[in-house]
Amino acid sequence: MHYNEHMSTKTKAPWAYLNDEEIKLKNLNPENKSGYLNENYHLFYIKDKKEISFNYHYHDFHKLVVLIHGKVNYEIEGKSYELKNNDILLVPMHKIHRPVIDPSVEYERLVLWISDAYFDKFTEENTEIKSNILKASLIRLKRELTKDLQKMLMDAYHCGNEDAFGAKILADSHMEHFLVSLFRLLLSPDFKEDFSSITYDPKIDEIISYINKNLKENLSNDDIATRFYMSKYYLMHKFKEETGYSLHNYIEEKRLINATALLNSGKPVAEAFEQSGFKEYTTFLRAFKKKYRMSPSSYTK
Image (cartoon, rainbow, N blue to C red; front, side):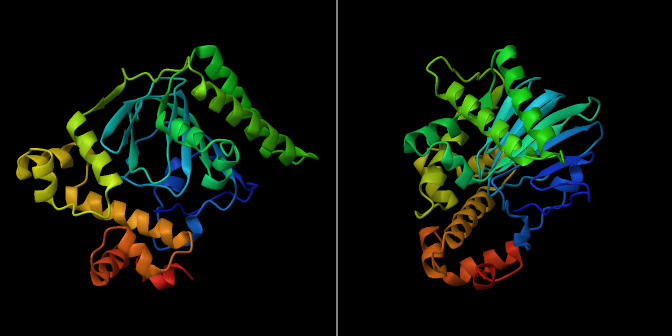
């Protein structure tokens, strides 16, 4: 799924101020490839207090949420993250997730979308750095450190919305300062992820990890139930309860995500569907058309 852009005429890409988050997040259009993040990043400052619900979705970019104030849980691939004020949440690209927001509390946040290519710019010195950073989903730092990071982002936001000479250059400078500072903190031996606000079922988490590492393998309900010593019917019930997806639909979604990523990288259709675990092209084509409302060959045009 990709976002469609709905920005005011006053907005100067890659920036936007949204009073209504649902304008951005409710208009998910898998048929329209214009929802790709075409710049290095987008930064949003959003403040609202209203009832809104989201379906599970994913992005073709990394998403970072800085909670300034509010009450929200993020459900990401079977794990629930209860955010506290000043928390930072990193949602890696292709991770299926949704926020669950308490509408009785004002919800104020900074939301940063980062392209994978731009992310690589900061981690190219060592390929292990990127994977280490992306493991840290919930980032809970000392208040003074978080406030410093928030200021860097707000400076980037304000510069990005100025008409003054060199505003974009300054905005990019603030953004790079923020990302370098954050990544240094995450790579510091003193950083420890706070697990007190994360709830999940360890067995389902293990199954999700296995699925994502073995998309090309046989992943039938029977095979997974046998592998993890569970009743098939209990597995199906528990997986749905923890993730919001049926086991079959989750696997198919992940295979489609992998296939579209391969297509976007230039791989031919035959290679993309085979490497994603679809045994027959007709099965892949049916699933692809159902989700994206177009054929794989049209998608790559």
